[in-house]
Length: 102
Image (cartoon, rainbow, N blue to C red):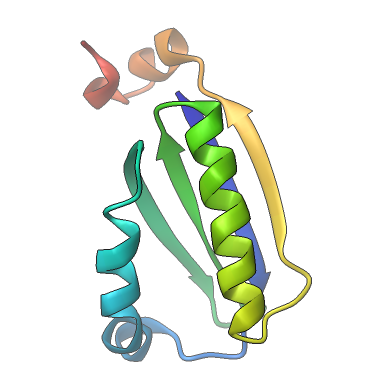
């Protein structure tokens, strides 16, 4: 499994207002090939937003990263940062990621 982290400067909205405005986008993201889940992240104090994604394969994570970066840029965002990690499933299961158990 592959973890993808994306974050970027974001002036708002945050909280419930962000939920209301981004619900359609969240529903669209949920249909991405290979996506296991997305955690939406936000920090109003530092003016940042983004997400933590878990994908089945590196290729699916990379395809999504390319697509989402273009989408964010079309929304006017810049300074988009990303990191890709391989998940150590054995250690993660021992640390309460029981959903990874097969």
